[in-house]
Length: 356
Image (tube, rainbow, N blue to C red; front, side, top):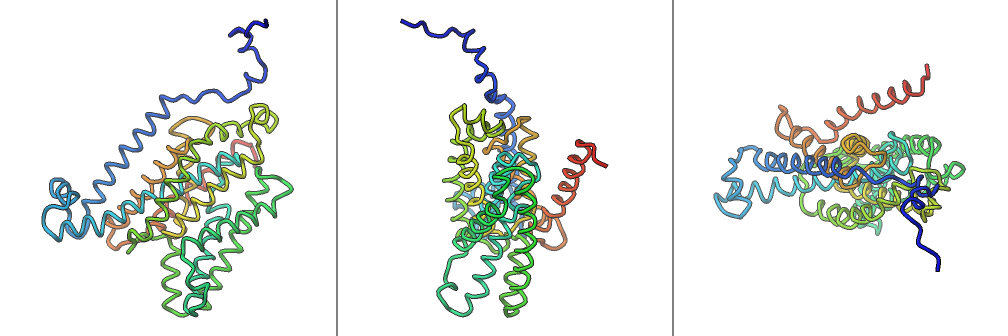
């Protein structure tokens, strides 16, 4: 009989020593709980603020369907769908950005930078433009169109960057170029439709939660409920992809298939979020980086990225809705925050590499 390997023998295994180390769970758990606490506080504030602010006691009664009819209507029918949608959209963008940055090993990789959001946008604007004709394309639901556009953009990026694989600088450059082309196509479509549809499309393209209800929130909620658990199940695969393909294969992971599955999850989440709120700028990019810094780990925990994204969108929408003289689309505020952060990341990478 062959004796079982001792603990010392197993610890000296050269392959085992290269495997991803266990995540410092205490810091991750603390970061997740802290972010969720912030999200709960901001949710209560967002539900309380409006044309007529609601006191905490009145808010509690309204959430249970009690109290003055106008207060119950304002909380349950006007504010609550918008708050839930903001959290769902932020969570979807956050997970999509975190997965993209982890899989591609690039802090600049996100659905809006890679062109996924632009693909979803051009598909939705096409549906709005053709819908006035009453043809079969005109009755395609916006979430379906956005999902198809995002998947088509992702497939085109993979095709154009096939020489470099699903990683590296090449896919990022291809995505940026495709995003510019799709944005130009969207702007062209806006010039070919009537004024009403152009205004409707332009308002959607800024990234807005105005006049949104449960109808827009449901597809995103379903997508997050299905795809976030899938991302959590594949978290160990995501950590393995931080290493070379040979090491990941030795750990029982097929790198090519793993990258494709994780990026597919990211594309679907980004497309569904875009269909509900439009291409809310920089949320996916910032959420992934915030989650990575809070957790202090090389990979980005999906649950933390979701919480960070939900908090970011809800905070931005609450400020844009209540703290400014006139209500702004949430995408304007996230763009004002995200653009300087993108420049910071570019400068940081440049100084780290020591380039002039």
